[in-house]
Image (cartoon, rainbow, N blue to C red; front, top):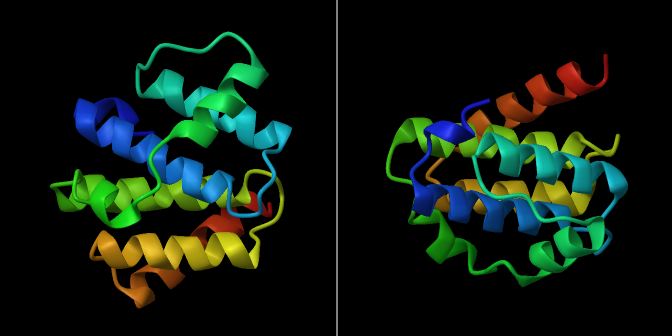
Length: 130
């Protein structure tokens, strides 16, 4: 929805955080691969050729959440990023406890309150469960 508005460092940081959510259950679903490809396209980042390449790419992204979150400088980019990450959590039809835990952990470093996260998760749940 907004990834093309991010700076290049924010785009790379977003993909690293997306990796965290995708890998939360240690399984990369086909729905997650499709969503990841769409997000890369939206962010105007060159597309890898195969699903295997995408899986390898996802596994190789940085994982230091605290460092990655420092790339987001505006409130708009932090909130938009978190909403997109929550959407990744719901994309395979189930928002798992591991994904929820990672969302709250990331939100802490993005300086987004627990209460705000709860609201975003409720909104996403209503949206994706229609």
